[in-house]
Length: 443
Image (cartoon, rainbow, N blue to C red; front, top):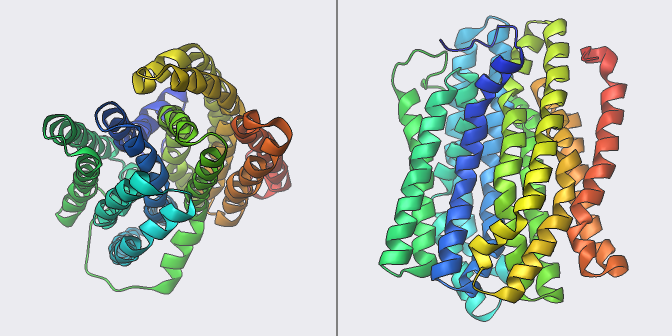
């Protein structure tokens, strides 16, 4: 039996409700991991460096889907909690059409700017050429990628997270199969990787669209409606923290790649890419739980159920604490295994990657709290505070640490930058929690 947003949530129900979102986020991230594995082993290190440089640009554009999805699901869940079902359906349709329009515009823009951005980040020669080809192909499927990111939230809010999970897993399987076929069998290199990823994104974005086009058993469906500035702006402001976080992470990744190319060459970019691939799974769980619980928080906020909001907040902190400890210990132990998978063919890269992973991954002990608190404020329809946490956490603290700490600690300064930024950010997040506790009553 499907879990309803109106229910009381214990640990079991929280995990059952959010696990589909967690797996959806991990499956979406699999595109980059699978591409990286096949490209690294069968297309060469230049191709892998090109993927690592260009992928943050694609992710930056795709953040629109995260913004509309998380912010829109919060708005719609709150509207449903207020008993306004027809208005909720109208808002949902409006936001989907808005995403498609924005996706088409960004797709055209992306084709023209992917090469200049890669050059700005230090790519040249073969890496630049490969990165341009990879980026332009993926720009063609941006509308589908944006829809896929938003449906991760909308499926949860529609109380059908398992359908969202199925579509994401189907897209992931298609991506993996095409990677094998195009890169390994047909030797298409980075072009094959881009086509495989793009087709996987189309599957993940268009299957849910077809589901909502027809009559279904949820409160969500697509109807004919025009655009209204107020609900679109409200959804975007609610979800701004999610978009800001992803955009900031993308920009920070670009700064990382620039610094690593300058200090260590392509080997540093490859090692950082491996760290990102591991993060897809660990951060996918933490972010997936945080974003998966947004509709629950929004519903009970709209229903003015303060006791359940307090319950969701306290249980969420416990889940983040336990999972962070598990992820930290397992990653420290498995760093050699992860490095062997991607760069086992190069002993120097292998040693560099093992060291980088073990130093970098201290961040996971505190990073989950920042994701959870930011998402919790999104659920409370306070996009402003959520955005402050996300923006300061990534672009301000992390970006500044990447630029400044290498001047003091050398190359290790880059690997500890995220941990330093997360520690500072968690203090900011808890101060904001304390300042707003009387308004929302979460403790």
